[in-house]
Image (cartoon, rainbow, N blue to C red):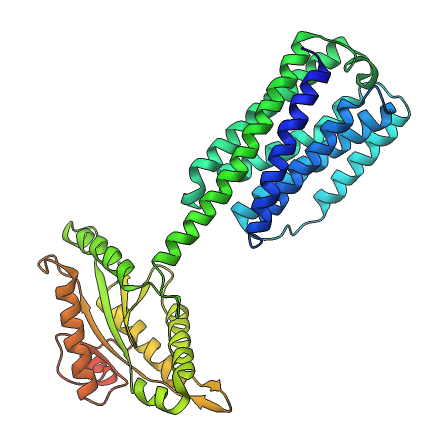
Length: 401
């Protein structure tokens, strides 16, 4: 085995990976991280081709340019991991300036025939691998936990092998561009083979990130109402059963809102179904804005919605319900030269360990909702109180600050 054989094997493998990654990036244009991953593999192909042509092209092409491309490949890899884990652009440009400065310094030293420039070319790669591993282990999205840990392990192994190669070069060779590639030192050959295999493992993690993201989106799509973005009935059943079981085990309380958009038929008759759809979307938007992040909004059907508020007192839940009612009543949604005005009625109850199923609690909330409608709509009614709207009931319950 020699370097030529290794580069031939690696070049063919990377070319196949590059085609596959490019197709995935094209088919999933909204996954920006896949574009970075595809770019990383394509750049790696170019680097490997240059290294394989070391006997046919000048040393500054097969050595210096190849190492510069290697740095850019790992930079693209880092940006890909950053997109999948953080989903925000890089804010600081200082790191980019440092990287560019390091690459320029390496090129200058290489052209000046300075010894041991190999170590300077490797430094950015080690830093990018370390930052990527740290970011992957720090990520909080549970769906990426396993693939992030595997990718971080591969990167750490890559760092270890590269450091081993650097130590061998610094301890036994002078100028890497002329001496290292010309030797068949088995330690260097097998460590290079290890790096190639680890690069293949990295490509597999790229695909894994893509598949995990697509699976997550499909799962969310299957649980989401297409019109409003709220949970659908199927997802509501799953979440409500889980919360009911938690309540029965004494692990927390859950308050339930049954919400109905008042006179929704009138909205449809006045503005058409497009206006009605817009009203429903705006209502869900306001609910998500006024509720807590942990609260769950589901569309039960038509203009009927269910909200689950875990780990909250009834007093706090009633205040949230009144705040939501007030926000909807004050909203004005422009549509085709007119304005859509809305109000909602809310029935409130709390899960109890004796309910048996969450549907029992939902029935209580529905009865409170109907009482609210009978009393004139645009209110919040607790399932155990007289037929009066929220402001009166709140005073009676002494919930006002």
